[in-house]
Image 1 (tube, helix red, strand yellow):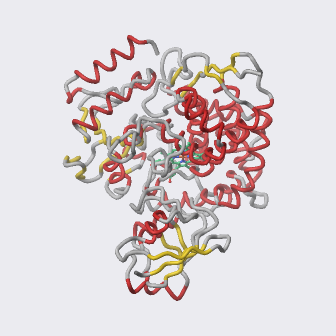
Image 2 (cartoon, protein in one colour):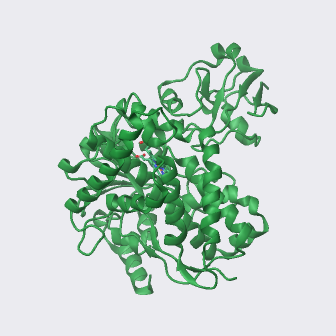
Image 3 (cartoon, chains in turn red, purple):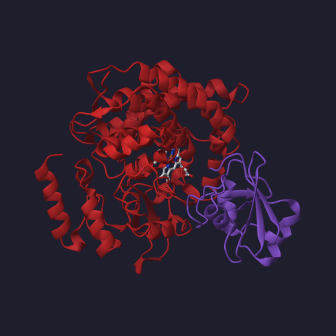
Length: 416
Length: 106
Ligand code: HEM
């Protein structure tokens, strides 16, 4: 981002009257200028009400400790899509997608338990070899002494290939998975990936069609350890409506796609921005273990999760009223100096690197957390075996979103 | 001081003394015992300090509370004798406690 844009944000963040400060503006994230907004909120109004934004009125929760309190309050802070779901943007009621991330107990618990076994330790161990083989193949195919987009060639390739494995989806069609994932999360806008909600619906209907075909094959076959087979045979999921099936597909595809992708991209960027850390890593590749959770904290691939109060709720000395929208800004809590030492530094050898909010906490805590970590760990192990360095040679381009915190372009060059 | 023994999945044992009032999770973290992650730091908000409590100790450690039961419900390797170590508070009555670790924390 060029300097004037950054300076502008710094000024806006510092001088806007508190009651008009709106950290949900997607431009803040696209311009990588969110830090001063949240630093101010943490200091001056850690639980903050914004009366007006492109997403309507909402509360911001910005400190680690207050976010943890909200995470545990699932009885009064609902994730249910009936109230608007889990992101700041309310979906059109008619287009609402039912999925367990956007359900409350007991339905949430029943459906989550069906999917959980896919990431049990023995299943993860089975996936490790496949992921490593794919990572090696992708890395061996990269050009030398030539600028290319790391996001496209590595981050997307590896994550969609892993997703195709999880679903036992035809590998040669794997890019359709990332296309549907992108359609599911894009903000409709002129010239954007989708321009209207109708276009989104069309993409998701196409996805549903393809997956219904896979479902029909598997529902009549013996159960297998892929996600579609598990859903087709699971007691809590086998009678899902098509719309529920669609919702859970979107959940699993988006859950396992954007987030991991952006962590893979973020890692290369952070090591380039912190050459001393890169040197430490080269000297001691075993640090991959603690670097991976640090990458996930530092990137915070989902900037927030949203809840809706179903009863009055007190947090940080403020009272949130029933019906109001609550946004837990993980991206801010992960930089809270009251919880994390030197939170703005990227340090690959932290003592408690998993103490971060990027996966959420409480009953909705990320199902795929250890799978995501495993992918990053394998990728970095294989990178360190091959490339002494990966140089970032241009400015990263970022996603225009207050929810998915990501990188679309990261020009890199591998000397060789 | 009361003692606790942590048994890793591979069978390796770690015996420590743990001050009454501290949690079994804190004992593991402060002594760098492998096999307990404790991502949430003791808030009962994840399930990464999951342990198995042998039959003979169950009456003394008690059973999971509501939030703990919810979190354990999502732990891939949970058994009827599962507990979250952050919810077991050390006391003289627990002197000699043994806990076993699962294959992996999640
Ligand atoms: C670095 C990568 C990832 C990040 C940062 C991430 C982040 C998150 C967060 C913040 C939540 C909590 C939602 C809430 O509290 O409302 C969540 C839930 C979830 N994630 Fe992930 N995720 C990642 C990777 C994955 C992967 C690889 C999968 C695929 C298996 C996955 C599947 C899910 C599912 C199914 C849920 C819903 C859990 C529930 O509602 O009980 N995630 N994730």
